[in-house]
Amino acid sequence: MEAAEFLIGVDGGGTGTRVVLADARCVEFAQAAGEASALALGAERAWRAIEATCRQAFASAGLPLDWARCALGCGLAGVNNRDWLSAFVAGAPKLAAFDVQSDAYTTLLGAHGGEAGVIVAVGTGSIAASLDRSGAYRIAGGYGFPSGDEASGAWLGLRAVVHAQQALDGRARPDAFSEALLAHLHAADRDALVVWLCEATQAKYAELAPVVLQHRAHPVAKALLAQAGADIAKLVDALDASGAAPIALCGGLAAPLAEYVPASHRARLRPPLADSAHGALELARRAGAASGIK
Image 1 (cartoon, rainbow, N blue to C red):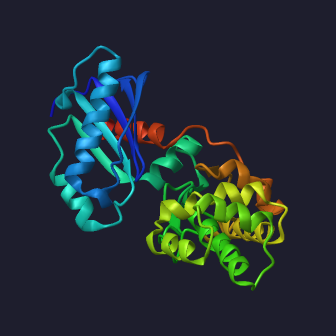
Image 2: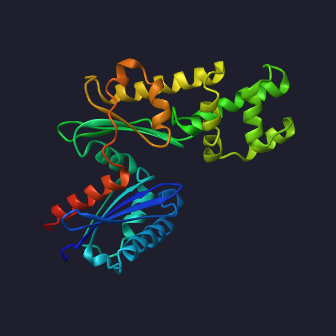
C-alpha cells in the first residue's frame, strides 16, 4: 500500500455529492459538488458520481486524480443495506487507504470535531446519531419515508397536505395556508390533487416544508412544527440518557426548527463545527493513520 499524498472526504446523498480535498497534513485546498451518490442508486452510479466530483476537485487545484495516492473517506446514504455496501466496497479503485461509513456518522464527526455529542440531521429525511466518550456510536430514527424520518421536510409535507385535502372537500375551511399548499402543487381541484398525490415522492413532499414555515402561525402548521420539535427531543433522549451531551442540529431544516425544540434541549444546542464532507475528511485521515500512513 502506497503512502497517501492526498486526503479526500466525500459526503454522498440522494441529491448530490460534496468533496473536500486536502494534503496529507489535512490542509484543505479544494472542494467540489456533483451528482448524487447514495447507494440506493447503485454502486456503479455512486462510484461514477464520486470519481467525477473528485476529478473536479483535483482539476480546480490543477492536479490529476490518481487514486493510488489518495486516502478516501466516504459518508454515504444507504450503507445500512449490506448488499449495497458490499457492492460499493467491491467496486473501489486501488487506494492508499479507504473507509466508508454512513453519512450520519460523518455528520457526527464533523459536527463535534470527533468528540462526544449528539446530532439530529433534519432535511428531506431525518436521523439522529451519537458518539459517547468511549467512542461508541449509536443511531435513532432514520427508518425512512413515509413511516419514519420524523421532523423532516417530507414528514412535514406529508402531514401538511392533509389540510389541503380537507379544505378541498369541505372538512376544513379553506384559508391562506390551504391555498398556498394547493398553489405550490398546481392543484386547482380534487382531481389535480389526486394526480399529484399518486406521483409524489419523498422529495416532492419535502418541497412543502417551506410553505409550512411560511404559515407557522396557522394552527395546523403550528401544531406540526411543535410536534417536530418534540420528536427531535425524543430522538436525542433515545441516545443520551444523561441529558448532558451537546446537541447539533444539522441539515437544511436545522435553523428554522431550532426554535421549536423544547427549552430543556434547546439550551444544549451547539452550532456544528463542520459538515459531513469534513467529517468524511477526518475519516480519510483516520483510515490513512490506521494503514500506517503519516
